[in-house]
Image (tube, rainbow, N blue to C red; front, top):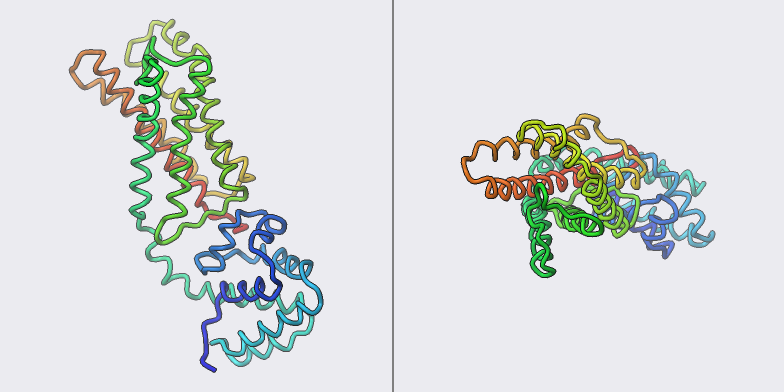
Length: 336
């Protein structure tokens, strides 16, 4: 028989086929991950760390009867025997009679074989997929387009916002929703459609992630616009430039960080790089402040400048929100 590659996906397929179980059952009841991640394991697009192996073995043990475990071992032995593993490794694996020890050893060898190929596979990871760039730009523009369309349809007058022209009450919540929904939906789509595929170790259904992020964005809009913060700052009599900078710092921080932290908590605080986390959280604030500085240099009537400032801040804010939440969703964790 021709030798075949011994892959993590191949091993996992035998487990599911022999036990007649679904990846969704493993994802939901044993490893607490989104089922899409398990399907990516089956396609050899990703793999877990050793930390999750006991849960996979427990799944195979609890979801099978003795006859099924015997069948699994027979199928796995045949796969091992025809694989490119060394004869010594084949003998050690197939001679183990204890099912849990046997399956644990097979899974660990499959992971180690995959890691040997990782350096060659990761060369393209640093290239930003074109779909990500397109969706990032769409996220920057789509929220503003939806909000302006709602203003046009319902005869609202808020459009680009600004002093004396900001939504309040329920409409402030609606504004937050229009800003947040395109960002999170496009971020998730870009992850699923990226070539090469991106890792998404989310631990909840993607619909729940969308709901939590969107509602938090709506709440952030409601809190800011109903807090009276702009009037409070304007009452100090600061120069116009300083006043706008203070307002935009608080505004951009609240609008961008609250939905991010909500998903961060939903994912049970995955382990992420602190420097990267600081950068992605600071980016919305820095870009928004840069927009204020940039518009101050343009010698145009104030109404036009206010419109330009609103467009730039809104677009760059949503763009950086997209980058931040996508970075979180693809961040590697110790449990992946």
